[in-house]
Length: 339
Image (tube, rainbow, N blue to C red):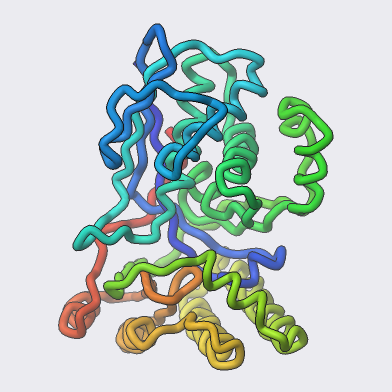
């Protein structure tokens, strides 16, 4: 039996600007997703979360519940030139509250864990760079579009990283003209993944009680007619993130807290100018309470879901959040990537 797991993610800085090719800071969190592979005479799939039990896999078809697994299998099949029969079981340990899913990147984590497990099952020599590239291609196949893949990077490499996305147009050209084996052997333009140092601040994650649709918010943002204003704010977010990367490496905690607050102010401005519901009242409240103990901001696309706090002391922060209906999560930075 083969078992691999990968952590979830939480965005620290650079949301929205990473979609334009700029760098971000993202952390792996210890809500891990697992993939187990056992010997079988057929290609079978079990996903307890969706009540799928030993379902035979058709590589030419996939439903919403199975699309990331089927995409991973197809990518690995092209890379390996074959697939052994096997029984795949996946399980996501990402948090759910009141049957609502928390946006900690479980689909990316499952994709990464599945890629790693398939390669290991086929006795393939693997490394994290290979897993990242295969998982990025699989995610594209599953979604029909290519995102920035910062969540794939966090799940693959773990801890806290600065991440600059690859040139997506270049990769799409390669997918349409080269084999998977050829693509993963290439250097991917613009891609940069750098581990960041540990800092003397605690990361806390709070959930506002509502899930959000990132794809719908991106669609709304793309319809914002003021392209120059969009470009200006995105560049300012990118500049702050670059400064934050430097201060993070230097463990300059006071500067880090100042820059986190400045990032949130820009996200607030982006909300106001674009009319996209990025910073909700609940996320603003989460941030304002966090600022009493350090610095807070929303995390990810916004519209609900999670926010973060970086603090030097946090004895009262979680009490403050709870008193206002914000749920502190038990997730912490995971020093390990895919295992």
